[in-house]
Amino acid sequence: MNFGSFWADIIATIVGGIGLTFLFFLAREKFFPIPAITGRWYLEMVTVNTAYNPYKNMVLRYVIVIFREGNYLKGSAEKIYEKSSNGEREFNGKNRTRSVIEGYVEKKYLGKDRVYLHAVEAGHGRESTNFYNLLVKSETEMIGAFNSMVANQDGKVVCQREQF
Image (cartoon, rainbow, N blue to C red):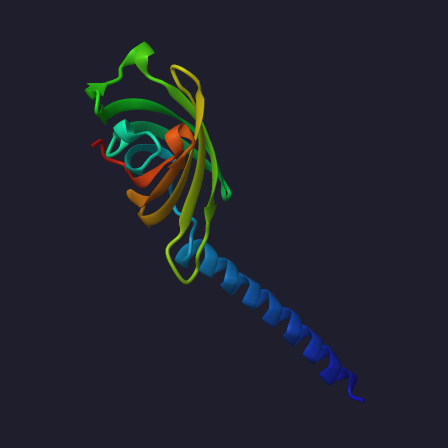
């Protein structure tokens, strides 16, 4: 047994492991980073299916603020617009309803990243829950679907940096 060769093999394995770890770190941070979604977004929901027919095709818009901590997301939202069978209106000041948002980013290395958000809205009549499943198209746009406990609604959602 040659001890010189043994120690050379051990050192080569350690150096190779450190090098490989550095390459994986570099790839994750530089080539496949978690999307930069912290900040203000404008979200638009369009109801497609609902148990309450007057809500069909209703459009709701929110301004949301998201803070990212690793893959975990938290934030808040305010309803700013509604277009429904009752007409069209914007919400300002005390008339806005607020939501608390929690969620996470699902990192996809071989596809588009996904964002899942759970919002609890303190509505005018009662508290309600919305769930958003969003595909990250870019750092300025996400698209997807929503489900709401209000009248068993679901539909399409667009989330973008620019106001609608």
